[in-house]
Length: 134
Image (cartoon, rainbow, N blue to C red; front, side, top):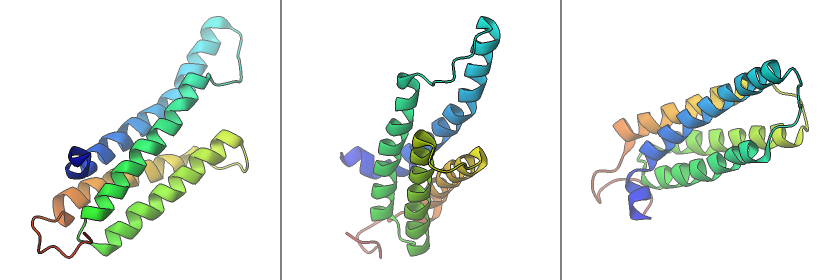
């Protein structure tokens, strides 16, 4: 678990990137499947949907540990807030509560990745004199 703490921003940036690829690949995969079979099944396979929950869990761990080790309170709030919004959008998409454009999911996933990279470069605690919470 200690390696997650030290590499949480790397994990978060990679997770965000993979999440974006997953979101972009979904319509392409099902469009190509529908074209090749000439039969479109509207349902997404369970194994593919399970990636959504995997990304929620991995990104939560990354955000949680990044928030603990960040020295910038504004970045902490943005990381936490964007994660909550992304989680709500993914759950909303799963349960089809309200229609939202996929653009917002992409934007939040990209923003989380950017925040992790920014936090890694400018806001990480280097020693015990850091102003971040212990």
